[in-house]
Amino acid sequence: AWKRAEPDLAVLAMVPSFVVSWVAYGIIAVSISEAWLGNEPSLVRSLRYVFRQGLVGALLIVALAQGAALVLIGTIILILSEIVAPIISVPLIVILIIPGLVLLVWLVFSPVVVVLERRSALTSLARSKRLGSGYHWRTAGILSVGLVLFMGGVSLGALAESITANPLVSEVWHLLWPVIFTPIMVSALVLRYYDLRARREGYDTGGLGESLPL
Image 1 (cartoon, rainbow, N blue to C red):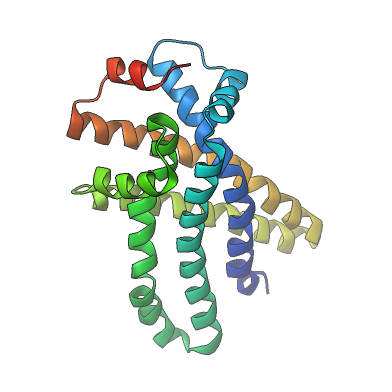
Image 2 (cartoon, rainbow, N blue to C red):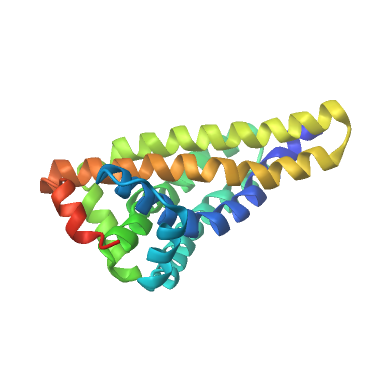
């Protein structure tokens, strides 16, 4: 029974993940940037930077855009898994979720662009696509690893419930897991952003110091 509930739990678990991510992106991006500049990261200073620069609204908008791509993917998977035979639904799912996956890869760097380049939400969405151009398959690989890790964590909660016969164990885990997972994934994407800027634009610590007035 727990295996059947797993997809629904996975989609629900993505909701708190995105609630956390729009703030986590800002905090982690600034913290990593400080470490790269040789400064000691500060949670208070990172929060102050995000709110002082007026980035919260733009972060929320780009996070919602990313969330829309995930909702599209999740909805297609849930609907097809319920109404179509498995032998047919698998190839259909692969075909139909491609637009959502492409959109997610294009938009994945938009939150860190908002923070480190202090651009508007719409400009950051376009900038994310341009920055990743030519490297989208590598970015997709990082996202795929993250998705496998995320789903594995969700499955652990469902498995724990089946072993303990206590639904509370699963409920608590599905609240905690996105909070644990999000900083890990965001850190990987921030580092990927730096890698792309270094490859495409010759970005270095000097450029970072000028763009991040802490």
